[in-house]
Image (cartoon, rainbow, N blue to C red; front, side, top):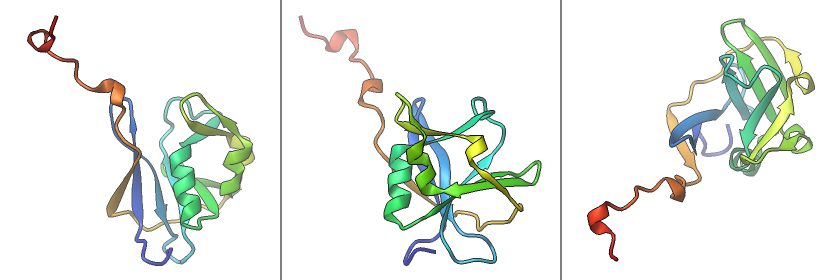
Length: 138
């Protein structure tokens, strides 16, 4: 792993809650750090995979060079250099989208599970609770 960094789950604020979107880990038989996503056929991932800019920037600061996408149910896996994301499309949601055809199939492999969490970004200010009618001054 990166010096001083154990496998960690990365969470970002999405749709009103903290969501785990990726992990920094390594393969069970390896030592190089990777950015990884376990794919469970989520809606919207039929043709592309996306990651928030803040996650990609964090991984780059840690010196991570490779991204891996793993479909556990089918025991399939793909990879691409992390830099591939910046050749993709930046969406209005702040996520970089990469077409799945840009990833290279590789043999399925086990990685070390994350036992810690890092939260990137802050909850949206716009979802703050509105004041009660009795709190509004006229």
